[in-house]
Image 1 (cartoon, rainbow, N blue to C red):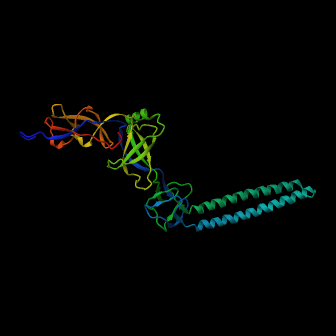
Image 2 (cartoon, rainbow, N blue to C red):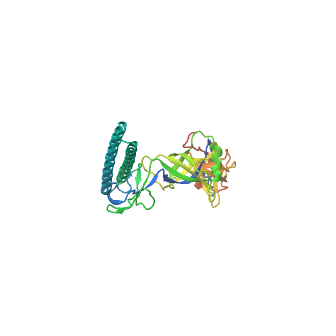
Image 3 (cartoon, rainbow, N blue to C red):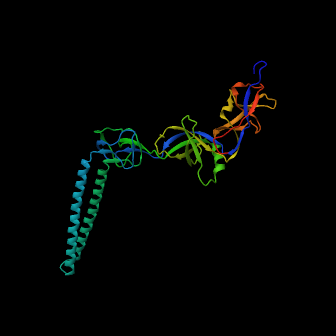
Length: 355
């Protein structure tokens, strides 16, 4: 207001009253539902890689091939041994049949029958071992082809074609790491809530029939357009940090979200309750507090310290410091200073959500 000039005109409105579950915001990080290190289970020379690093692959897709010729030879050897065992079983069965016929005609002894029965039992045991050896050799042969166990995004290959790799069925770090595969859809977002927030959540949602929905924004964005479902809270509070791990699951059909990426997670901890909302631009900050400018009964500007919550329905939640009938300055803030007279014009506060 200049010397002798008219007071500046500002737009004022009373805080918007809503009954809502005010969400609490947490810092989260995306993680894969499934992660697997693809390791060789047989040793040999790597002969082929069937993907590009970072590619999306589908369950069953062939990824790596190891030289299978040595294992094919072992299969052939095992099959040959199996055929010999089958022939011995057939011969032992025939000899037992003859011994029994001779015994029936009193031309043979029971001892011979017993011996032939033992020979057949031994031959059948050898046959069972030969059959198992064929399956064992075939398993090693099959392990020469490494396929994707699930649909996801594969990382960089860790070995090159022509490299001699090590592997065994017992697994472990001694087996050559070929690549890492992570699932993409759905995807987790993990976050930690304080013990106090956990207690508040438990009281409000202990008897919910369905898990609550969460809102998610990427990185530093305030656009909480992603939706997920809270599906896990850990069974103990971390003593060192005083927090408990929670997790939500959300769809990622377009593979736009990546494990390890940071996110903001909003979760309604308490039951719906009355709340006051003002435009986020109406909340000013100084070094120690947040302030909302109001117009008093005498037409002068009155700053009010406030406590605020999250932004919801496009507006800032005010948890303390305002009265329902306060005239909040929502337009012309740059023209005012505390104690100055203003010309207040009534406006209205509108939200993005339902009334």
